[in-house]
Length: 290
Image 1: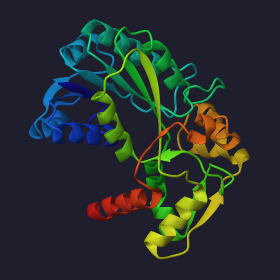
Image 2: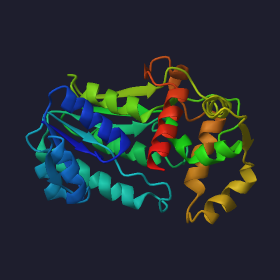
Image 3: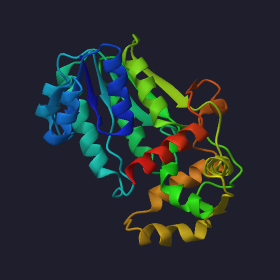
Image 4: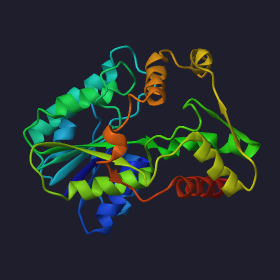
């Protein structure tokens, strides 16, 4: 039995389907019984558990071969990441008490960066879960290709905006499908102690590459407009963010190169989904819902 948090998302969903296809038993740890019903229909056992509810998580994680941990996204955190710290502390306590045989936790490229930025909350997670007695793997994934979903309508109009710059600079990106499949592989592996697995796509991707892929798929010219650094804060606050600084610092890290895998990802595992295939899947998904 493998317990999965975040099963209703893209990564967790792919992970669950991959394990089920391999004949593995899956326990879906969900907050909402209605969402759990979908996974029950797929053959999963369902456990209702908020990530701050230690007793519920102990029940969800107990008696398992492995547990997959995915923290909820927090793009506009309060200073010091108090919400993330509460969740991390509760998850660590529940894992310690439940005693699964192993843990795979989704982390991120840049979790090892010491400079202040949005990804420091995953650094905190790694530090806290590293103290568990069972084997733990931190899956550090690159920038999600699916972030480009927000650019689809703009691409159809002929131009996408980019905070990653210069537009020609390629960074480590990965499809959520590859992340989910890799997490399934890791959960079924055996290892000792703490390990870090870095994951990126078959090649690095720049904003120019994203625009070119959109152009190929849409059959029209698509250009990149880089957003001036001086305009970021006003834009983010206009979108409703109360504390945009960590997000801005994260973008600075990607643009300056201090958020990256060592040796340009030489030692990272490589996914199979390229940017064009990822964008095609997003466009097909949008078309199916229209």
